[in-house]
Amino acid sequence: MDNQIVVITGATSGLGRETARELARLGATIVILGRDPEKGAGTIADLKPAARHPGRLYFLSCDLSRLGDVRSVAKTLHDRFDHIDVLIANAGVINTRRRETIDGFEETFAVNHLAHFLLTGLLLDLLAKAAQGRVVVVSSDAHRIGRLNRDDPQRRRGYRGFAAYAASKLANLHFTFELARRLEHTAITVNALHPGAVASNFSTNNGPLARLAMRLLKPVFTSPAKAAETSVYLASDPRLATVTGRYFARSRQHETARRAHDRTASDWLWRASETLTSFTYPTV
Picture 1 (cartoon, rainbow, N blue to C red):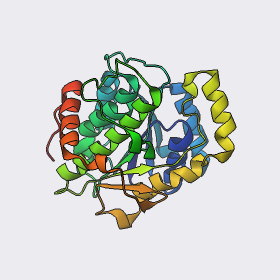
Picture 2 (cartoon, rainbow, N blue to C red):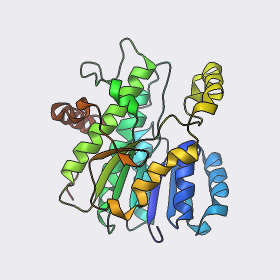
Picture 3 (tube, rainbow, N blue to C red):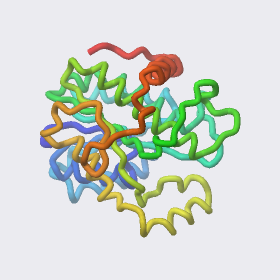
Picture 4 (cartoon, rainbow, N blue to C red):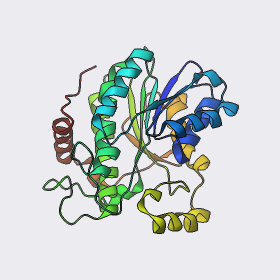
């Protein structure tokens, strides 16, 4: 991964941090996008001992729940880099209660899908300038019970936290497969993955009961380092240079739920996402 530039969202803890650590060990330049500058600085310090190039680790502040932040960090990345080799859409949230972003969107849908939809589109030109750009989307097998709610995409009625999360993970796959189709004539690949149940800080924003549950379940969950292996594989393995539009788990291709390949649903989600983000995808 020497001389390759990797941008990772949500990498100040858990799966994202371990993905960044291993790619830094392989020699990549790492750019972490996260909300908290203090956590970002701590993450960079933590990664340096393992990094082949400790001076090529960067943190950029970006709150993915704010589309204005997404646009701002994309501009910063254009100012600092002439290309990006790998974009890893790793950040994700799950909420037990409905929360709304400053832009007026249900937060799970906004962070898990809309922010990455917009960020990828804004960085597509930099990915196209790489020798072989890669987009890696962290989805989940939770997509198998997910349903896109076309009548109420912001889930203002009858909110259920895990249903919103599962729908966002299904949206990740619709995005992955549709973007892969749109880029099939380019050198950019787009693949998604299921990391497994990861022992991380995920869901601990939902109060003391959620934090207790995560502590109790931690012994049976996959370690972040083990879970990161598939993300690292998709980002770095040269054998995947022409593999696109696929779903992986444990570094092997897996089948998705059939609904993830529903082209009518993909078309609806793509049009809705462009409207909600006020962004039309460029052609490359």
